Image (cartoon, rainbow, N blue to C red; front, side, top):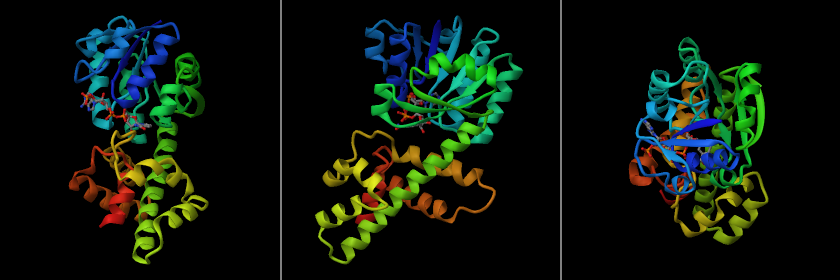
Amino acid sequence: MNVAFLGMGRMGREMARHISNGGHRLTVWNRTPGRAGELVAAGAREAASVRDAVADADAIVLMLFDDDSARQVLDEVIAGAPAHTIVINATSIAPATGRELGQVAARAGLRYVEAPVVGTIGPARAGTLRVLVGANEQDAAAAEGLLSLFGTTRHVGGIGAATSLKTVVNLGLALTTAALGEALRLGSDLGVDRDLLRRELSGGALGFILGYKQAMLADNDFQPAAFTLDGLIKDLRIATGSARRPLPMATITLALAAEASDAGHGEDDFSSLAAYYTAT
Ligand SMILES: NC(=O)c1ccc[n+]([C@@H]2O[C@H](COP(=O)([O-])OP(=O)(O)OC[C@H]3O[C@@H](n4cnc5c(N)ncnc54)[C@H](OP(=O)(O)O)[C@@H]3O)[C@@H](O)[C@H]2O)c1
């Protein structure tokens, strides 16, 4: 199969590798050229434009940053892709945008599958992501062979269902990170020994996020980022913008995260939010 993979960011580079390892012909494209060095060295073709990348594609994977980038790139895809090509959008976007892009793709004669992923760079590299699939039965089945290269797939419903679930999952990540920051701040105010505090928190409700980001928090060094704070802010905006009822904790976390980003942490790992909270 000819597969075009659009978006060679942190996740895209790792995920695209599984396409060629799976025996497919891989063409990659990125807005900023030259980010796919290892993939090109391993035999992938780097296209100079989206249209060039998708011209003879049987399937197209999008792994971009947000709603706007996915919308812009899909417009280019529509201008260049053969009819009935399957478009798999793995970008974490708003459910409403997912449904909109699904309709835009269908009107253009393309098939659209949303496939946001749970997991980060390590699982992307290992092919062990949790891939949430939103599409009709037929398109989900058609995408399964490619999606299963990225990890374990779960077809959760039509377009919008997978991006909804992903939005909720990342709300949990954001709130837990902020909660950890607040717990560390209170521990510091009360003069609790840092190691003792971390050990006790590790065994409790905040244990997952503390264990997951232990090294970065211990070193107070949030580079290289696995998932950026600006990425988390994007997802918090999706959550608050998608909710029917107010999400007060998300709103407060978003304000704090935006403050940390303005203070220069936007490209740091999202766990810098906990450290920023503790330090301020
Ligand atoms: N990192 C994680 O742990 C993780 C985990 C699960 C899901 N996700 C989601 O996966 C997606 C990608 O995340 P990532 O961490 O790989 O992000 P990233 O490293 O920041 O990569 C973003 C990609 O989007 C491209 N892009 C941004 N704006 C664009 C535009 N206007 N037009 C065309 N391309 C554009 C970037 O191109 P340039 O190189 O030119 O900037 C880059 O290829 C996001 O939706 C994120 O929420 C991330």
